[in-house]
Length: 219
Image 1 (cartoon, one colour):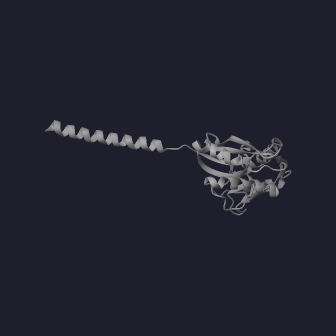
Image 2 (cartoon, one colour):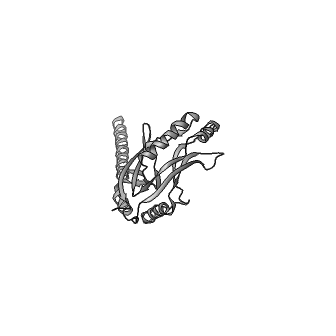
Image 3 (cartoon, rainbow, N blue to C red):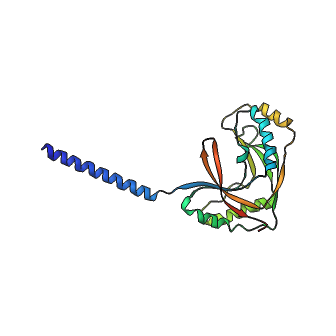
């Protein structure tokens, strides 16, 4: 009787193990590696140097989550999670963004707070790119929408995220330091290409990696 009970128990355990294995194998077959992606444009070195001087001046004045200058970029379209196996579909679509007749001029100047100066969550530097930069963002949405990537609900508002504010902190000293800073004119450049970026967490913060380059002018 004991042997019979042990045999029944063993068969029951074995069937449970086999069932669990089949579930794991099935879920693994359905598992898809996804990447967090966005399109954006780079900043030239002289602009980065001026922004670094500003951040060096401001960092001691407030406990914010400051962005490393090497991470600063202008996002033209946030894509979000995308399957790695479909990366070629995405890059093929982005190659359909219409070229520009000439490079897009942009200026980096001024700073501000989002959503407002009284209860800010983001400290930013402004980007002035006019209709040409907005047209690039719009064209990017046009070619990505057929892939199921939703259009932005808010209007395009280009900026550089200099710092994030997770909780209320005193900002009086920082505001005074901004008012005393030498200049909030950070330079200008001309954009003749944009990039597809991969965003992933790293030991020292978010790491951005360029996956593809797309020429806009001078092809």
